[in-house]
Amino acid sequence: MTQKEALDILKTGRNVFLTGAAGSGKTFVLREYIKYLQDLGADIGITASTGIAATHMEGTTIHSWSGIGIRDKLSKDDLAEIVAKKHVIKNVAKASVLIIDEVSMLHHFRLDLIEKIIKKVKNSQEPFGGMQVVFCGDFFQLPPVHRAYEPEVFFAYHSPAWQNLNLKVCYLSEQHRQSDLEYLKILNAVRQNSVSDEILQILQTRFCPTSDVGLEPTKLYSHNKNVDAENEDELAKISGKAFEYEMQEKGRHNLVETLKKSCLAPENLRLKVGAKVMFVKNNFDKGFVNGTMGIVTKCGYEEIKVRTLSGKIIDAERESWVIEEDKKTLAKIIQFPLRLAWAITIHKSQGMSMDNALIDLSASFERGMGYVALSRVRSLDGLFLKGLNDMALQVNEEVLDFDNKFKKLSKTNCFHIQTMGEEKINKMHEEFANRVRGEKNSHSAKATRDKLDTVSETKRMLDGGAGIKEISVVRDLKIGTILDHIEQIKKKNPSYNIYNLQGSITKNKFREIWNAFHKIGMSEGGGGYALTPVKELLGPKYSYDDLRFVRLFL
Image (cartoon, one colour):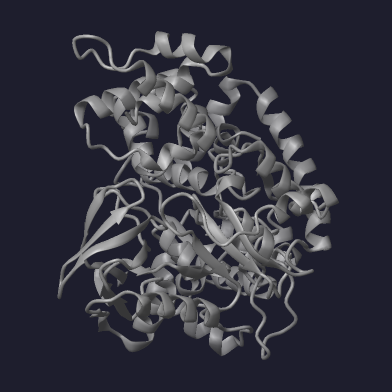
């Protein structure tokens, strides 16, 4: 199923399970749907099973939103206490849509408890009180964490609350993170529990400690102790003064602690000039996203400069993570959005995209861990291995069985939306829009979007982290048209950051076209780089769109 087809189904108001392989664009589709709902003025519960995932969505954890916290059961008194809380009433009562991201990490029993709270607040026995429910995630990725005191843990799809929703499965089939076909073959084999000797041999070729990209790859480990030791050892190797940046905190202690756990920025950040760091928050205005890597070039008492892989110098400033209620700040933490990044855990890498990584899977302790780690990397050229154990390339057999069922259901849903007809689809969209439209915003989403010219809409999606192919699919425009828009954006603002788009084609393809442009040189009279001479030099193996894409970086 394409991203556009998934969005068409979401806009009908049906309950949806949005899934697909790592890099298929699940988060992008969610963000586009959230933007659509916000244009309508709809009240939305934007949540995730983990604080890290919630931060990516600019939402909150489902545990906080629903008031369930860490409870694994609900007595009558517990239920009465929760539904009396002001913030729970505010969150649940008005919400017409509930989104839960990274649903694979949500315990089945906790999903049932969450539904129980929602039904009570909304005074309705309909599934989830009658609101639209959107689950998003991939069960091949990391499962719920099981603590000793909790009941037996199963995946969320075992929950009666899940089963009663009559979910429409939208299984995204396109790949937007990896364009390397050989690497995609490896990832699909791991995902299907069908790793052959041939694939093992290819992986064996990636056992090397360093890369040739100019910056040592980030190391991924299965355990925190390895990460902490690696980062401290590497920092100690750098001569010069170490600067320490303490996290600032305000508000209720328990809520502050919740924010700390959901934030990747450390309480005490120790840096030196030359330290390898990673940004842990999105700031599109400054040109970085969660996962952007770089080297510290300057640090002082309240001054940090970072040079990214693209060469861009970013003046890092303290950012805030906040919990609010009725526009009142209940808790706030303030810290530079950075952490040492010679190494991170595989758990913390979930949701990230990396150009290169050195992965140690010798201590893998969970099925799916290897798949999560390997799928963070965009191409085989960017993969460097330090170790593998027997668990590393395994996935859960039950998940594999359910995944095949999800694929079949998605094909059926895809066929229905393809054969429904545009008129009927638009009618269903308008009916749902009227149902969830906020009083303060009675005009249609289309009217709002029509205010944006087509180039501005492309820029908005670029600012949100979308790739060229994603924009093309969702907007139903040709790749060439999107390239036209980017060229116009770059002409208006030459410093506009597009380096996150480099993964759109393989490194080898990019390098060959880049070298061809430089061999031909610029047109006489400063007319820029012409396409035709480069096309004639390279022949038919690369399209004009490929050439135009590389030219954007010249």
